[in-house]
Length: 240
Image 1 (cartoon, rainbow, N blue to C red):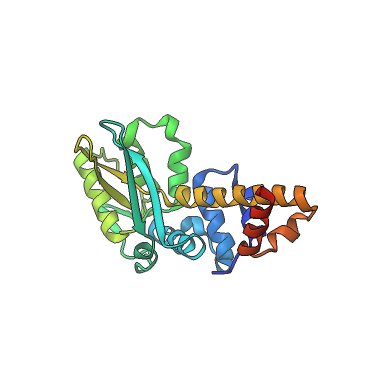
Image 2: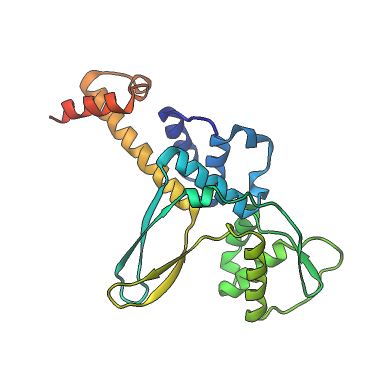
């Protein structure tokens, strides 16, 4: 992983600010891992992608992943905090053995598969239809497709098999509300989570550039070249 500078973070944010969250995650991986530029990161299994994003977060933003969600029953704010190293240090997922169900063979889902499902979301009818579309996208071409109507139980079984083959593909957080004592689960969307951190950094850097340039007439490159400690010191003097 290369050590990105403050100017690199601003450039990355500028390039990705209008992209879909899935594409923002891929852009961040390509920026941080130059060796991945010759690969199609969009075709990595989701677990491999999530592991790379967790590594990136630990390297640039620290080990703590902190956030919150709302209780679906009473609306109470539910906070979470986890150690990103627990994700970054998991064994890298590979394509592995194919998954066979009902005479059909499936590979592990990728970001490209999720993007395909997201593009067709308006034409889908709920979660089950999206799950079926994802399965079809992951089908390994081995002849004529078998027509099969997937039941809810079969979709759940397929999901369990894929989760067992690629445990980091979906990161599920469990919550218990301290107010109503209800329980719920939420998936941690690492591309969105990481990009929120990156955007917060970019906006902070932009504010500091604006403040110091207005006060001292320095250029953006001169300000971004300052160490964090020196830039904070100048900010304190300007704000005083």
